[in-house]
Length: 389
Image (tube, rainbow, N blue to C red; front, side, top):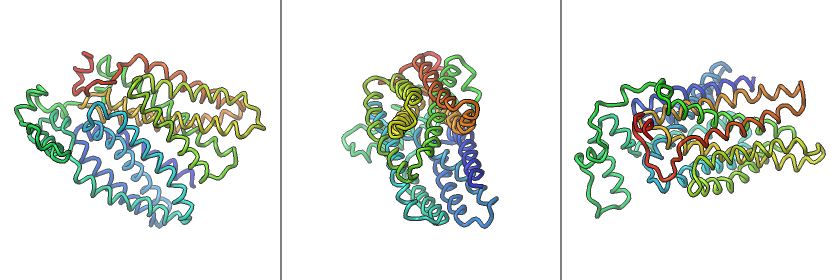
């Protein structure tokens, strides 16, 4: 029953990626984030008090949807407000917060052994997050393409005041129109998920990014499951995973900022693939070495996901940014779903799962090098700009 509940939760995450990305491109990032936070808080709290297993599964499905919707849109909104030179640092900082949460969670779970109270303890903070986001301004980029330029001007001047820019010239509607050249009808009403594949550049971008996200998650969750064979404490393993990922987050920041997004993602996929294949040659009695290679590989893959979030946000245009992030995130969840099935190939040959998990990130880490580099590049707003790049 535990496995079924987890599968239903992951199905909710998959549904959240499908639904909330495109909704954010149509109705705005902020309103969808607020809805997702409230949904997560209410459904998570409901799951803690669910009287029947079927009701519990429903609440978990809706919780998964909310968490995924919040995650993908939170990153997009953050990047659309972040100056160019700070994007890698901010993106990795968000990923580091996830890692810190991963380190703290085992301690919370160790102290609160009853799952009802643990579920409640993890859900209630989302009410507080909902209140905080009420003060977060909507993306001015989205407001411009939605033909809500007056609100965009208001938000830009508000952010300038918050940043203490008292001497700067206030942004006016005329200045914004001259800068953006947006005199067309609202673009958000004419965009659909099909536009991810309608034109050549968008199609290539979506396919290659989907391969990146799929392979990262596919191998990441496979290694997380495979760690059980070492017989170590689940609480200790999660802490070790988090501690290993922290320095790799710093490395991914430096590589993204100075070497480029494409190369960073490619390295953080190919290296763990090689490490996984190398683990096949490690004797079974050297468990510590096998554990080291597994933990290191998982750390690299976790950092590749953070780099992929940044690169995906910068590649897709504003009109399709959240739809694109949602679709690639859906591919990531698909990788997590397929990973346990690949583990079953161990029945045919004990080494086969590791061969697959080592080969996939290497193969998927190469095509990303053919996509445009976004280092020191401004965010694009329309599909036409992407095709002309």
